[in-house]
Image (cartoon, rainbow, N blue to C red; front, side, top):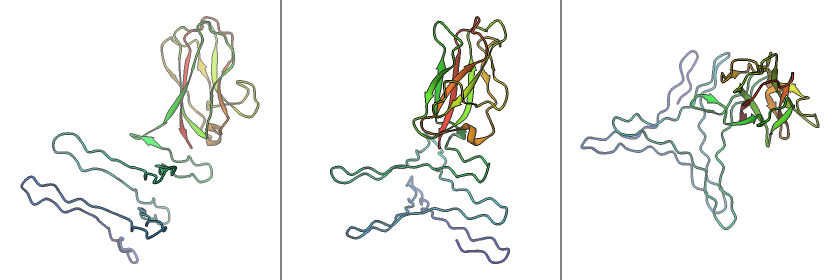
Length: 237
């Protein structure tokens, strides 16, 4: 779209397939295709970029959506990487990259239906529980903790707490940094009632490098605790 002058709004740009003329005919498709390369040259790329923000404004969003159905199932959205050609050529990746943060801001997340967290790791207490600090996840790549929850089938019967820890380097299980903003899980709380941790608001604390570990750290004897399960939700970074 054309640029606006002075205080004028920039012109919008639309690529719209033609509407059907009736008679149960399909609407016209809209195709955006980069130019084909010649010889060993690459094909032309396609870039879709929203409008930049002015001063303290927010840049325009990029939305990809199918038309609403008037009957029957909704249509799929498919994003496909390019196929490799030849005997050993690799296929193209589909890469989703969230926006980077400035200073201490929170980086963007890859979300599904508006919710963060692509994978999870769980600690499950043994059949004969012990209050032993233990590692239950090793990060195979960089990732960031999004949420932590705990539940137990039998309460401790006395004062007993647990925290989830990020261990780095050669630290022993549970010797690293707590992922809780404050407090811990109460193992003497009502049985079969899920507890949600208030996770740290410090991005660096929640971010794990490849090789960092998650561990549970007990503060008291196990007492009567049983059926302890902790699940940590994470996103790749």
